[in-house]
Image (cartoon, rainbow, N blue to C red; front, side, top):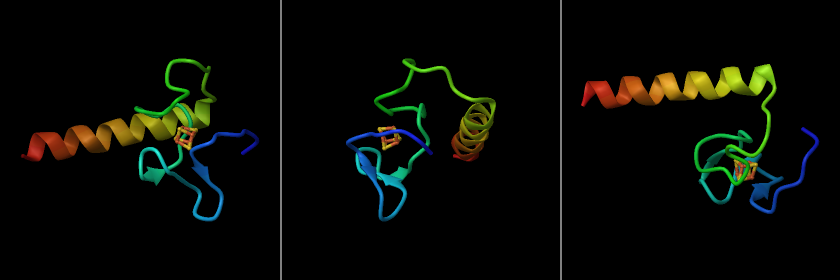
Length: 59
Ligand code: SF4
């Protein structure tokens, strides 16, 4: 990826703020709502949302 973020951990490809995989634009990301996401990123975020909804509905 070609971007710079102070929370990005280059060694592990993770987000220090969210303590998980870096997906620019994801919920809680500093870029959330501020950038136009590529189709690939939007698809990854949609899948994440689906997974969290599945987890919530199982509880
Ligand atoms: S998820 Fe967002 S805040 Fe976290 S490292 Fe990636 S771009 Fe930065």
